Image (cartoon, rainbow, N blue to C red):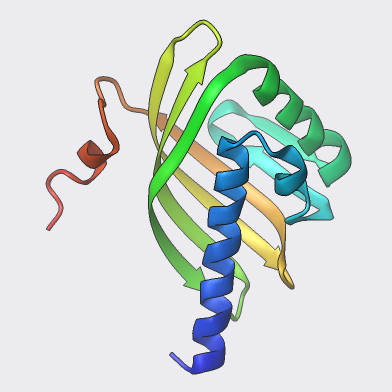
Length: 142
């Protein structure tokens, strides 16, 4: 991979991981600054779509703040297409709801960029019953 392409790929990965770090810290200004004003966030497994950084996505982030006690995303594996400005990420996720219910997931996001900002996030979530820590997501892999 050419140096410029590698640098761009590294920047895209950093942006996606900054997005998750901001989500986990409930730093919603930090999440929104990474997005274009017309960004779309779609949760396909929930048939939900949020249009617009400052409207629909901000509403989704308020729901997270009102309903989640804690959030974790990690164990990332990324595939980047610099020329087409997208990144495909598989990762573990854990939500602790306000009622202390813990939900462990094995998720996939398809994130599209316009320049250095995220313009679209498409999310697939799969609940993983009995998952006790993120290392279980990689069991069986070589």
